[in-house]
Structures are given as C-alpha cells and as structure tokens.
Length: 220
Image (cartoon, rainbow, N blue to C red):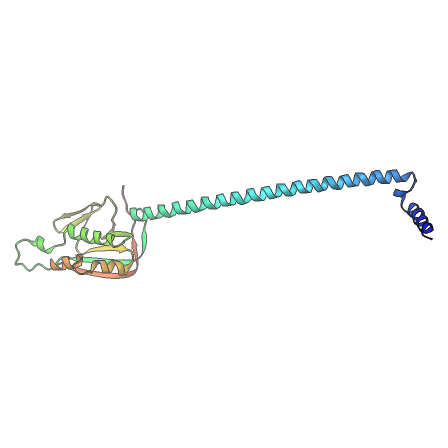
C-alpha cells in the first residue's frame, strides 16, 4: 500500500515537473531559474542601495533646510536690529502713537527789564527732549526737524535753531512711543513740566494715536 503510493507520487511528479525529471529541458529550466534568482537578488540589492542613498539624501536635505532656517533667523534678527538702528538714528520715518508737547513763550508784561525771561530757550527744549528719551521715546522731532545724535539746539534771540533750521515759538516737540508712559514721565511731581511752568512757560501735552516723524535730511 504505502510503497505503491510513494512510487506513484514520484512518477507523477516527474511527469508533470521537469525539474525533477530526466528530460533534456530540465537543465535549461534550472539555468533560467538560477539566472532569475540572481537577477532578483541583484535588483533587491540595488533597491537596498537606492533606499540607503535616498535616506542619506533626505538627511542631507533636512540638514540643509535647517541651515537655511537658521540663516533666515539670523538675517531676520540682523534686519530687525538694522531697522531699529535706522529708527533711532532718525534716517527713516517713524510712525506710531505718542505725544506732542508744545512750549509757548509767556506773555511779556512790560515790568521786566529782560524779555529773555519770557521766552522759551534751548535748554527748555533740550530738557523736554531728554525727558522723553529717558521715558522710552523711539524718535523725536522739533518743529518738523528730526532729532538725531548730532542734532544741535541753539538759541538765537527769540528763535531756536535745530539742524541749522531756524524756528520761533510755539515749539512743537513730537515723540513716538507709548503715549501714557511719555505723558506720565512729563507730569510726574517735580518733573520737567512743573519746572517749566514754574518759569511761566506754557506747556501743553497731547496724547496721539498716530504721529509721523520725518526722516533726518543731512549727514550724520
């Protein structure tokens, strides 16, 4: 029984599977299969190599993207610092909320011998400017002249010269910055407004939602 089944199975397999038989084409079949297996192995290896190259390229791309991002971050910081410098240097317009301080001569009553006691002087204007900068003003103009590092304020009789431009009272000092902070700094007890008013100078301060300061024209 069992021997007959094994013999029948072997002969059947030989008949229908030339790989196990003694047919001439069996060798060709094995050769083709071996070549196919080698080809599959080669393609598989190539795929593995390509996948490895792809991973390397993806990693390199991520590193380059990170470098570009870091460079953009540094450039953004530099540009921001440059804009801040240009703003404080006064070489570009400044726009934003702030205050406008107006100084006016007091009325001459004719009883004083020296009329200079009744007019706004350069130190009065400079004192307000310093007070505003100390309170965080980002930019200041005086009667439309942008105040910069080398701005000179000179008094000639009843006029004041700012950036070589002569103007008379009232003197309008515009400052860009936080309006409430600037206002509080000017009106603190014993502050500069109190001092000016004690000298009889008329001082008005207006908080504004938007002020435009012109850029400085000239050499720094």
